Image (cartoon, rainbow, N blue to C red; front, side):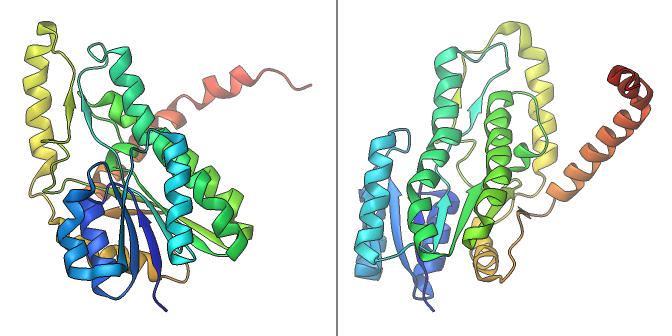
Length: 276
């Protein structure tokens, strides 16, 4: 059966690729973007199967209105994709209060608002699938994007709790964790804090490390088939990496954490105190 999708940030990157993937196989999509003219070519190609909606996910009232419009227009929502977001670059010391708040407003609260707006419809129909677009940066953390990492770690925690809360309603949750891809995440859509010269030497070192991690960036078009496999799965995963590389990064990180926790276990147990 065809599915109805709601995809935020549909004008570029993964949001656009997954909008195309859904439309090409005969699904319908409510596609949100700050500037809906970026979706004109999809409207011309797919007609009434795509509903462009102008939306800034930072605006809670606008989010609820957009989700209601999408549901009323198509009559249901099967897949809700929280893709809208951006990368904030800057060392932790460099990031301003306004930049930190803006990062969380979009990457965390935007996803929260969309999810909250969609859940009553999904509960009423007894089904639905929420896709939260996180990152390998939601599993590990890297220099010069600390506030971005923090926003994705928050999204990961929120989504894991959500999955437990809505399972009895027949609603699935999947956290998609991409590695490096040839998108404009680090380009036009990125924001940069004012650099502090004290970090200039380390900044170059961090940039070299980032280039080494990225290796051969993935092709965003290849994620079309991958996301369709996820949404069509009878038992979809809570978490799934996209790209060749994230698993190795996560494995090293978690092995290191486990080793440190085990090494310090005597201190941990002593900190529990006497239970006698």
